[in-house]
Image (tube, rainbow, N blue to C red; front, side, top):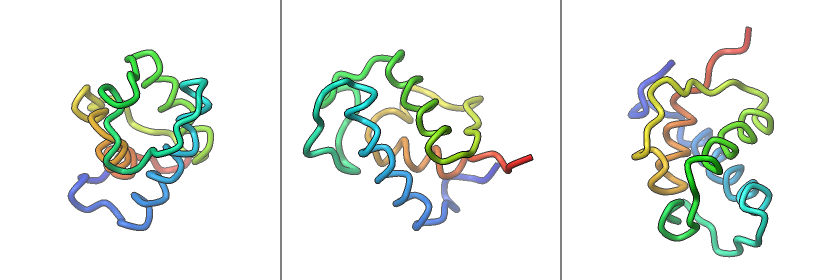
Length: 94
């Protein structure tokens, strides 16, 4: 597990794109203007349940497990903060 300060920018960008692609599926509606700065709770009305669903979908799409041990509400502030968390907390494949 790595510190989010040392996150690979390319990986983080890939995760941002993946989150934006998954949002319509998880929220069951179009999310046309989603970007790194989109706030998940405020702009999109995401709940803790849909947040968890998004993390599970991300694991599936990225084909990697995400360590959720330190995942907190602050990490769901924006698409970018979630991407930074995910990119820094991908578990190595067994």
